[in-house]
Image (cartoon, rainbow, N blue to C red; front, top):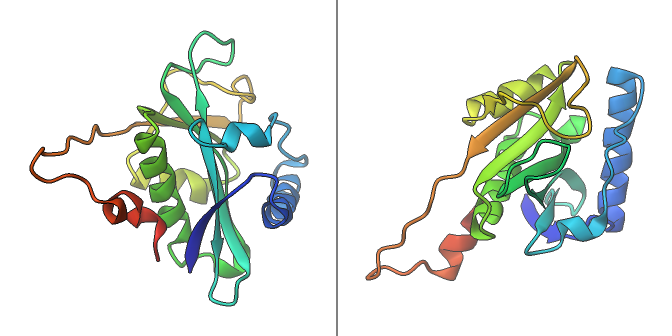
Length: 181
């Protein structure tokens, strides 16, 4: 398995987005209508990743985009919002969601973000379990497009501050290790 950064409008990303939208329709009766601009996922304001299996088939996805306070949607300065975390059914149970989540967190932290935020729904209990097991907490104040929906759940995680010892600079491979197989 290989995690690669791609543009949100990459053809493989579009194919997986269609699959996740179909799953949302199956679970909720409708797709996700949150506005998604590919430019929001371009560094340093965000990043989008695809996971490819050994045959070169895209099997998982996830991205983050910068958010800031002062909007009616309830975000805080320094937030990185997780979007489109998805693993195709035939690749579930392999730990791919955890690997994508680790890559998102490391990348957002490297871009200066201080908190990860996400919204999911109650008909995705496996997603809620994943986030809680990775240290995410229920948000005291809901945010995002679906903040007023009863079946919406919001989670946050403060990102740890990395302090490098001056005698031991961070090497490039250490900075990118969550992205490697």
